[in-house]
Length: 83
Image 1: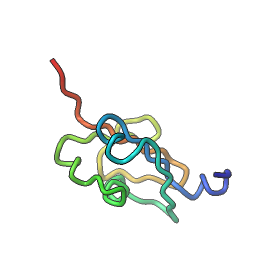
Image 2: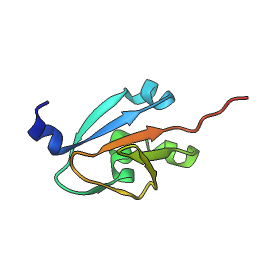
Image 3: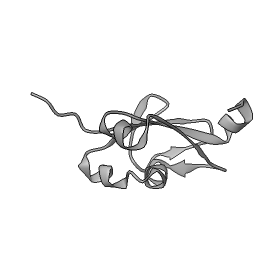
């Protein structure tokens, strides 16, 4: 992907079981601002929202309704369990 294509897309990174289900990295083409939830729905991962999914834009945690712009990176972080 060249710089022009990257500037007109959002990179979505999936971790944990999301990576297993959807793959690690996605480039989703956008023409302007979109919400995190819009991209989560587009990826087909909406069921994770009610399971405690956390999101981060460009390395900073944010709300599911936060807005992304072309060139941003969205990380999808599933809940962590352990003992």
